[in-house]
Length: 271
Image (cartoon, rainbow, N blue to C red; front, side, top):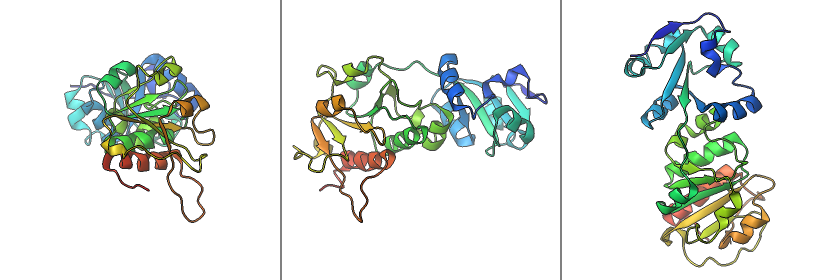
């Protein structure tokens, strides 16, 4: 059973995990270095717990204590009860969901380990927006993708914004972040077929088969604007394009990913 501790000093060192949550540059460096991430909101906290992440502590406003009582009673981590005003002073924003938890990160699997045991893989290159990362993970979980590979410069899936947008789906899809990114493209490690949605190419080559019928397939996604690197495009077995209507030239990467995942999972939509 956790200790419920009332805290009234915003400078209390026990609240250090929650300080400056709006400072993106600080948090994106500090959290991985210290092996923690922040889960925000009751549902996300519960999903992190169910996924086996160890809780370091919780920060709650008084009205959320009863809501989270079962979690408090079950876990040994300290729980800090604070006023909404103090929570805002500590975190830098109004914590309208009323509950935050500092969670311990898990060691990541290697890309080779993931590729050995998965059939449908998402490969993200330089996707550096936390909202897009969260949206893609949510779609990947919902539509049956097995794993995600991230280039070293992709945004952190466990950053608070990513976790929040994904509604905790980042806990459901295993991912790896290879240190030596070009090796991801090597034939010895790659799945049987890679497809790359590329808005720059108007006439993609004919598809050799429906993606949902392939034994193994990987979908490569690039950052908005720059899209995929030349190296990634050369490595792809196929380039694919989502047909557009009403003068719209493209979808953002999160929306395009959802369409592509659905096509891989079901064979629809197709040209």
